[in-house]
Every structure is written in C-alpha cells, then in structure tokens.
Length: 85
Image (cartoon, rainbow, N blue to C red):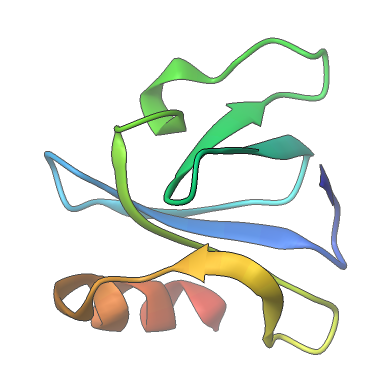
C-alpha cells in the first residue's frame, strides 16, 4: 500500500509507546498483525517494521481506517487517536 496525504500510517512503538504518523513510502503486510514499512527510496524503516510496533492503522482520505489495515490494541487507542488530528 503506497502512503500519501490520502493514505497515512499511524503507529505506536512497542517498547517506548511513542506514536507517529507517516505519509511517504509504502507499507506491506507481514502476517496478520505486523508490517514492513519502506521509505520513499524503497529502504526498509527498521524502527517501525516487524514486531517493533504494537499498534498501527492506515487512514484513508476521509480520516477513517482502511478496511483490513488496522491492528490497534486497547492500551494504544488513545495514542493512535491523538495522531489523527
């Protein structure tokens, strides 16, 4: 899935709990709950790929989650919500 201003990745890092937002690059599913995230040059972004994220969600142009592209744990819901605005 290509990231853009119309398709944004929201994520929460597993160990630090830091939340972020990414709108450039691309995302691939890695199993049912993990992602590989690549920058616009095609290099894998290690710190948010694989098991390094606890929760993540791709938002479409309407700021709603894209069907099948969300894995949000209850303890991360507030952090994800804060990155939407």
